[in-house]
Length: 197
Image (cartoon, rainbow, N blue to C red):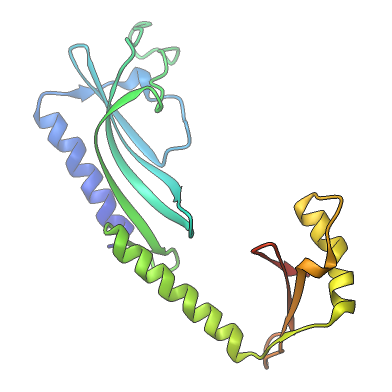
């Protein structure tokens, strides 16, 4: 789905609560906590926040970029400082009871393409990664000798912040040049890969 479809889902959710008798609570919306957009709604003492938040999740394999649609209820009593006061007490995003949440995972930012199915997202990202690795393999992957490892040693020290690094634990890989790109060099150290240069 496109970002405009996510905006339509957000709008429908705000409309749903307005139809339940909630009204916009302007006093708590002046602060910004990094969310994309938020609307605070009040019905009596019940304060609801509906927001879109550009965020990420991590697991053992990779990082998932996503936009989360969250509906939450304030768990704090919000002070009323008068009509349209910008000094109204802040509704903190981390101090709410989550009523519902939908996650839209970003597949491709340039193509403006999101999906909700996390398993399909993981499968697509795995496929993209495999294509990337295969592209590198087609370029001619070559491990460089001991002299290159000694040169890469100071680079690895800087990147990892370690004072002692054994050059025997380092692999330096060269990917051959293509018609449009120069050769690319990588240093592999203790399960992590660092691009050199």
